[in-house]
Length: 211
Length: 119
Image (cartoon, rainbow over all chains, first blue to last red; front, side, top):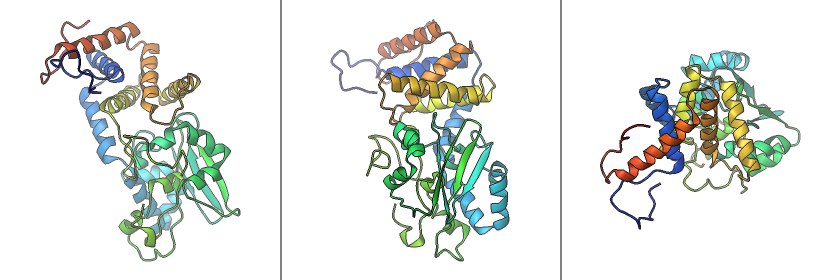
């Protein structure tokens, strides 16, 4: 990154970091060999930076809360039902949607790396990729939930799902009370990213404005 | 608050909008892996295995692996996999990296940086 250490010479361009140089090297070699298309790379980056994110997943959840037939399809064939709303692509082909109920709370992790349902949630947050979450989610899920401010009664069973390159999970959070008659758009605003990973709950209308 | 849910790492975009890339090279490295896999040069399973091996190796080498070095592992996995698959020779990667560095050093500020006499 542009350093402040310009004792040597002011005249040249800022030299990128070693990591950036390595990526530049790899990219220019692969493009020259015709193995990747630079335009396709730009489209992909733009998609993940601006178009894909947890709002997609929130729409899926809001639809499931509003439409029992859709919910049934979602729970039996996750990837297909999600594709109905136009959300398809990498890391979304084989999706299993797990439903939170009064007796079961689901939580998703990838213990090996960071497999994550990109088409519905975008790219994973830092903590999802970090070793503490990956190792503790399985060992001590209630402790992890407490760290996220979620305390569940002992009567609720916590299930942890370990994602793989082939199978990814989305949590269908419980519909909060006091939301009867809300539109899908209003409902979607209550669905947080963390509630779809299982490290949070959907917001209730009274807490809607808070984070 | 704990190490998990606590404040985001410095410079790391966070919040419900979802994480993006902290620096352009992370996005480029991300896109290269996805494109190469999409084009059939390796399966996503092979990718996940390479990435998790790099993460393990980094942990063994002392990386606390808090998520901020995730794309370092990503790049290491990518470099290894393209070499294993014979797509790019490791020596070429190194000499091209150095060529880019020289190009930056040789280009006056404000001018586009271009490679001269590719290796």
